[in-house]
Length: 309
Ligand code: MLT
Image 1: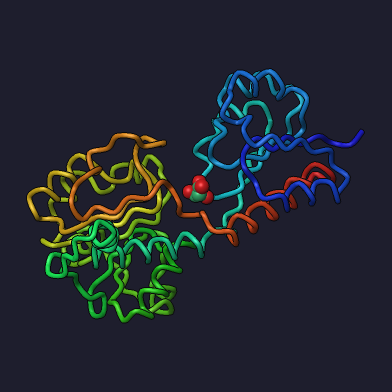
Image 2: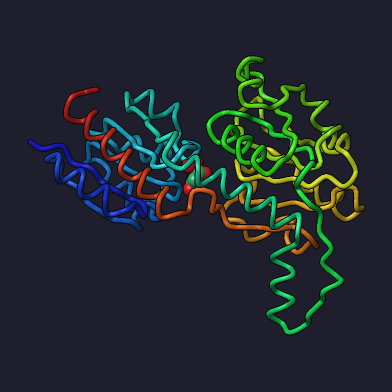
């Protein structure tokens, strides 16, 4: 019997086609992930579950997943899957670490520009017919120091793009070797040093026990006056309430956040502060990235279900 896969989030049609081409029966139900009771009711029929971020794979879903062999996350973070419960059940969890890295890095760079030149506020003011030319004084990026926390796949691309913009790049990443740093033309530094020196700080680490609250109130207080902070990685890396206070006091000149400690974010200490640019977790939201991750997750899942590899 052909394996059956459920796609319970919005995934590019390309994924459906790949499953079909590989002889896998596929149910495309992009809104099912939001209905956890319904998902728990039907999950027992499937060998594979393909998701993005809306589906939360909880222990209850996994208890009902009597035939499930693989969960494929079209994207990088697997924080919406209870991996401990999946592993107890012998269910493999796979992601697509490369498909959206350029898109996410580009979003971080776009957010840095938006914050440096207050583009969203200037745009809203111009739309309102105000023509406030002298209100929106910005800063140049050329010659400024960018502190990159996490210089892996996405952070590495951010370093490259920032070097192209003639920024000086310092990176804090315990996994970055000196040789690799030289090759990337970045200076490997300790976190304390980065906090002291950076004009802009951008985060590119997953949320783990080691990275949670890495920009704590204490660390934020060590930053250079006038710093701008960009988070397109994960909510929970920055103490948002402490950052809001430093924005109000003027110590931090701006922030650009795509991710929040609670998502979907309807309330947040950063909302409605001047020079805080916010987007609703759009880091991977380009047609190219979504096509890439959909193709990759479908290929990987099909390989696993058909060959065990
Ligand atoms: C990811 O982990 O791939 C990104 O945060 C994108 C997303 O979750 O939509």
